[in-house]
Amino acid sequence: MRFDLKHFLISFIALNLFSIFAQSGAVKVIDKALDIDTVDETVSYLVKSAAEAEQNCDKRVLYAFAGSVQEQASLYSAASASFAKAASISVDQETVNAFILKKEAKASEKIVYSMLKKTSSILVLDAVRCSLNAGESKTAMNYLNSSVRNSKDEKIQAKIKLYEVWAALCDAQEEKDIEEPVALLKAYSSMSSMKSVMPSVLFTLWYINDDSEAAQALKKKYPSSPEANVVTGVTSLMPTPFWFFVPRKGNAIEYANDTKASSISAENGSSKKQTKAETSATSDKVKRQQVGLFGNKENAESMVSRLKEKGFNAYIEEEKRPSGNIYFIVVVNENDKGTIGMQLKTAGFDCYPIF
Image 1: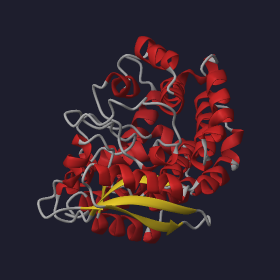
Image 2: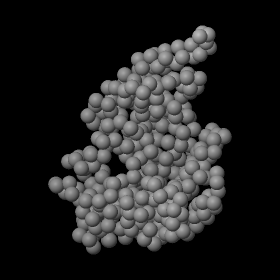
Image 3: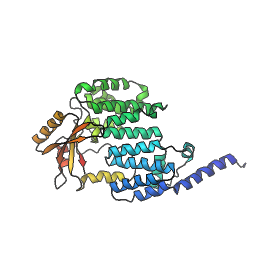
Image 4: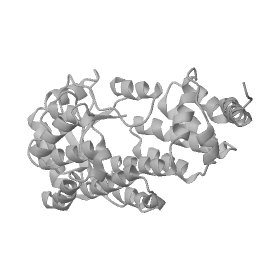
């Protein structure tokens, strides 16, 4: 059998890259991070390690993973910043492309691999998504107006269009403010170039405009999607702040508070940090349940009135964001038994815990 020098060299380089990378700082840091008990300590350790890392690959991976953990813990502003930092760090793409993950790789190696495979454009879009969840539409648009617009990837361009609409919805104060976003979404719903984000397009149309045609298209064309499951009541809508910002018509979300349903999972994350973030919602650290977040105080007062009619002692907290926008947060204090969240959902209100 003829010796194939080229094949041998490629295999040798790939295997040695794995061996070198397996001993890299990022793998060691994530190994330790997975054993830390609290999310706050985990994030602090990851961010500190990222800042101190000598290799760009390690820095990028650690900032990206920190962003994933922060997003799972609903620390959206911090997650956005971490993803943006990761996106700004250049890496040797040839080294990334040559890296091969073994089937028997441990959890930390798989995380490093998945974070390293994220392009700068994807990391920027991660930052945009988290900014939108934090209600920071201006920050989201700043990221969208970066070099990510130069991407030739059709899926990246589709997400840019979707996120631009979502940013506009974040700023909507009244029903008339959603007219232009709705028109854009309807146009996108017939474009083949938007196929990769079509479930999100249709879901948004249904959610904000009570669009029955969009709901039917979602159930027919994408029956297994998380969005279709929310429409049909199989799962409940994950109560991220973004959906509190958006005005909506009618009763499109009537199934979203089914307490027997599970939430839509986030796009990122794979480690046991997800379990920690999810289970912490039932711990004694929960101080309040957020039931709404509004840019208009009258809408917040209306929500408080509805809650009080149902027997909940709701009130409003004001929060000024770095963008200068003031939001009015409707909250209900948690009780000693930690059951207010369940009571709110049973009464038909979306909520999520504040720690």
